Amino acid sequence: MSQTHNLSHALIHHFHRHRETDELYVSIAIRAFGLGLVNVFVPIYLLTLDFSLRETLSYILVSFVIHLLLLFPAGAFVSQHGPKHAMLLSSIPLTFALLTLHSLDFCPQLFLTAAVLFGIANAYFWTGYHYDLSKISSFKSRGTQISIALILWSIFGALGPIAGAELMNHLGFSTTFMVAMAIVFLSVIPLFLSRDNHRSFGIKYPAIWRRLTPKNTIPLLGGGLEGTVWEVLWPLFIYLYIAESILVVGLAISVGLIITTFSAALVGKAVNRNRYYALWIGSLFSLIIWPAKFFIRSANLLYAIDALHGSARSVEMVAFNAIRYDNSNRQYSLEDILHQEFVIMSASILLIGGAIALGSVYLAPFIAALATIPMMFYRRY
Image (cartoon, rainbow, N blue to C red; front, side, top):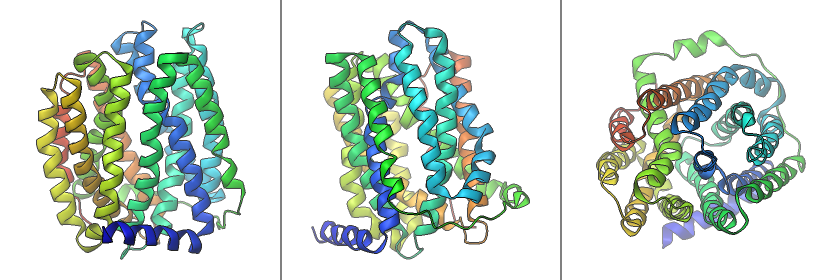
């Protein structure tokens, strides 16, 4: 109880001291809800339009490849114009991507166009977001600060799949995409309430390639693999092998995010004290839980284990991201972010490419379990 009270005090204190950052987080919360309405369901939507599993996975692959290809142009934009402007810019292709998805019902040829637009939006948004969070967070309180970001993202992200499932069941996919598009458009408004106090600088590209050592790269590959299973392949696994129901998928993802929210409120200070122990504990529980999820075939058991996994994932990801931002030092912070995103997106592309080759996501929980092992050994460099 005291930890939750302390986190609430930290939130209020943070909001008073960092107005510019707070406006950014309001924008992120709105965006999380808007995307939460549809993101989880996009692959399922494609399946309902009679796209094959391979075609659906190809859509995801194209989005990831575009993200990777535009990573360095996005980094250059952030270095010159600042992270908030990069996130603002990302809303333009994102809005058009949602509009394109809305059009797939009568113009299915546009499905790869939507993937390209999502890739552009994600490259600019996530580069700006990670760079900004790495700069505003301090080493001693980074666990708490990342917990605050995770709580805001998870609360609104958790509401999205529930509301999205209800909207899709009653009004259909197309209407839900239009609602999401309107909310995403509204999410940019808070970014205009204050200036982005950013001084332009050049990117030192050799510093990025120097980071590509096994010690720095292999744990990030694990993080990319597990994150892709959690965000992309696990919802597909639920729909294909557990319950062919949009509502079940939405509730399962939301339950995991809700528990992540409550857990994140408790783990921030623990991560401040010992990142590596928290990461080891969280990753160990994920290593155990992922194979167990493979054998689930009932909705009630699914909700229970996703709730348990949400708790483990919050410990794992707060600690993992704290170390990520520790490794984004002041001199080469953007270069470090670009290295991390390059490795993580490469892992995502390899995983989706493998799933396309197999024509199945059946082994996804076991791949995620194996990916947690190198994550346990992620350290500052």
